[in-house]
Length: 229
Ligand SMILES: Nc1ncnc2c1ncn2[C@@H]1O[C@H](COP(=O)(O)OP(=O)(O)O)[C@@H](O)[C@H]1O
Ligand SMILES: [Mg+2]
Image (cartoon, rainbow, N blue to C red):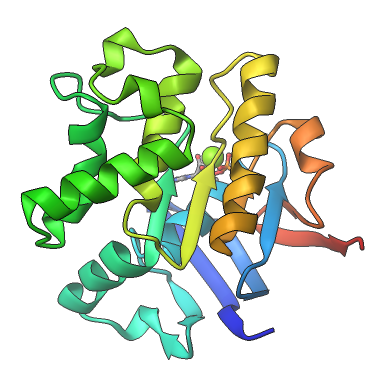
């Protein structure tokens, strides 16, 4: 399998008053195209920080992040913006949908940002919503959708431009267990159907047990990297 991501000795320090907080101490991890990883660890372990760095939302103190062979930590701000738009999809614990817009309009936004025509963006949006099982909810606004459906819209928005890497930060953290189970199933289905690489941070023990590869973080370090086949 071709390598998609190679994180090398990544460090992230935050200066906080007098203190220099070592949030990521030296994280190294390689991910192949099509792989789906579960990332687990106690609150404060550095999981979100790692996802933000890999997604180009923040820059590291030291270390490198090779994506398709290029070190994104060397990118200028235009290159980083293009990287985020073309290669990365983000799903967060809270859906962050725009309340005044319906499902199709919310999911169109990344396509419009990438300068697709309105017709094309609308078509891509509808396809993505169908893929996440929301064919019958296209014109609903977020307030007219259940929590699980809102999260499905957020997932559709993340995958509408078919990013190479989906970063999901506790995507089921705000959902009841039955709804979580369905969102989990959806993520695995998308990984299979679209061959999309995914890093999924989760506190959900049931979800964590489903991943073929599970990375455990503690105190800004990777403490375990287990694969089962
Ligand atoms: N901008 C920041 N400034 C100072 N400390 C931060 C900042 N962002 C995160 N932290 C600290 O980094 C640690 C790890 O945070 P985070 O990556 O969000 O952990 P996790 O997602 O595993 O719960 C936490 O202790 C948090 O308080
Ligand atoms: Mg977090």
